[in-house]
Length: 290
Image (cartoon, rainbow, N blue to C red):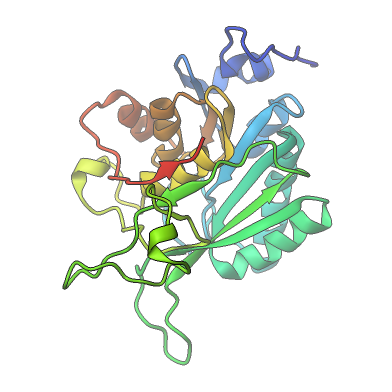
């Protein structure tokens, strides 16, 4: 079913961009967002072509974790990559020309997924290393301390906002760490340009940041804030096909962006998060250049 394109300034909700046949999977909606409880490969084909400004995808990493009875996290390597290619192709289809696509995964998988996107005509912009030490050292290998965040666009980027971060200081003496690549007197007072290595992301452990009903890992809102602020303008549309704990949708609600979300398992935790004003975002001192 072809859906009508919507004017940028017209009053609309994300459900207007999804085929009505998916309505029975809709479990939550707001002024900005729509949440579907279903397989992403069932909902993504229902979204109109070329309407999404930014996609952020944080799929299961195929590490044999227990997400629930509906999620298979024990696929063969070939099956996992084939599955990822299916939802990636749908994500590219729904992106606007110039839209941004971010994929958060292990380097092992992102090497292959990045190659697939490049072969499909997407434009590579960055491999962002998100430095989070969550695992133990592995015998015979370097200590794996970062996750890969692929950043591609569908041709030339429509939106790229420069983010600045405070100059890093020594936690012992409090003085600035002078590795910012320039003369101090010539530095922008709002901070240094964000690099493609993010060392300031901490694991989400404190209960004030997450639901007690979710025992699995959650992403810091700081990651999603950067993704959204970097690649969208107010009221743009963000798609996250793997809802998890609802971090993306929470950030979009706070920043005034439209969003479409989905998850294969129960969305109870996500809905709770969106309705619970006591859950806090992580502190961020990022500055966005206009």
